Image (cartoon, rainbow, N blue to C red; front, side, top):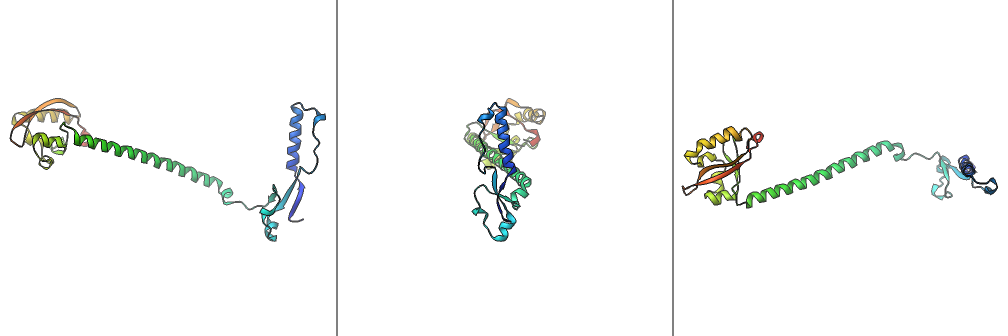
Length: 212
């Protein structure tokens, strides 16, 4: 019929013939070769356009039927583009996941540093090496010197140094810290809020490109 039916499939015939040829090459005795019977090389074949014209649902066709002139799916038409978009999406997803992991680690590191800064019994500060102003001090500063944080932050640390130690401190800042050199075991005296001076032993790690 014009819709379709069971016809000889040259593809199926070729597949069967090729299989028999391989058996012979691999040593099969021709007398043991099976006889091909029935319609195993035949295949139900239908025309999609006629099926659609007559309103026949392709799902009702015999199992294994071959349908000619089937309309291409969207995926078939744009297969390469779709695969490219999927690949790009997966790469972006991997980048986002990596950034989230790094962000989580960064936040954890910041939290750990903040905890160390706040609970350390050693005096820790961040200061501007150009202006010598305190930018940040940890609670140990207040405990040792007696000043509130607001009385230290924003003020030059030179204002709290013993007059006899100002020149040596200035020299360390100008010659070493501004040059990016770490200063170890530098000693000078700081004035407490009570007016008393106490000796300090400093380790300073400058970051000249940030000015601290």
